[in-house]
View: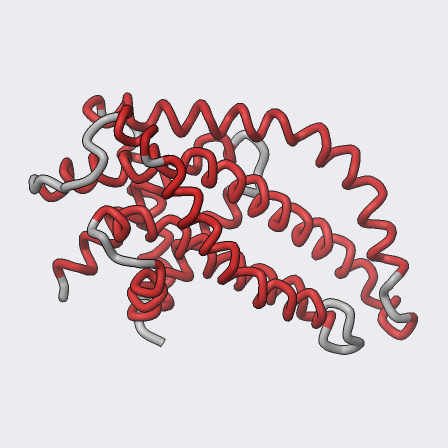
Amino acid sequence: MRGNISLGIGYLIRGVRLMRTPKLMLFILVPLVINAVVFASLIFWTISYFGSLIPQWMEAIPGWLTFIEWLIWPLLILLFSLLTGYFFTAVTLMIASPFNSLLAEKVEEYYTGREVRGYENLWSALAAVPLSLVRELRKVAYYLPMAIAVFICSWLPGINIIAPALWYLLGAWMMSLQFLDYPLDNHRLNFRDVVAFAGQQRLTTLGFGGSVAVCVSIPLLNLIIVPAAVAGATLLYCDTREQG
């Protein structure tokens, strides 16, 4: 596979640094506030559900695997954190999608010095909410068949031991697609183009998406990671495009 995992992680770090840019502050603030409100609303549900779900998963583990129960327990906790983090992020992104596209537009203009024909302002971003929801649902339709396949693998004896790794890889891939979609959508490219673009530098996009997937599973950090990921994905898009 082409690309570099560490390079992908570096794009998220560069996105975090861009959050301190005064010219981008207004466009970072709106998705940041939406993200904080959604996460705060759902965090209580997560805590109450977590205590009963993990023991149920442990009971479903075959008896012949009890000798590695000490390893499976933290893996299940990690898996649950990744899944809930991805779910919360998906809900947040569905609500804040137009504002994230506007942020990607402004980051690209700041980074390249070239104008992007996108939403231009917050009012046009608000007007684009219905179309953005349709595009977000397209991503869900792409994700569900793979998620169902991995879910089935999670219950197959022998295969289920690698289920956490499969969930993580799927989450990393979807996170990369989710955030790369914003700058590519600004250039009128459809979701199929986003998948093709990400596949050209698969290791780089997996490194980027994997680092985002880890960050959205960490409390408090997940409150600020969305605008940073939008910025990082935009930089990844710009650099890849310039390299042909």
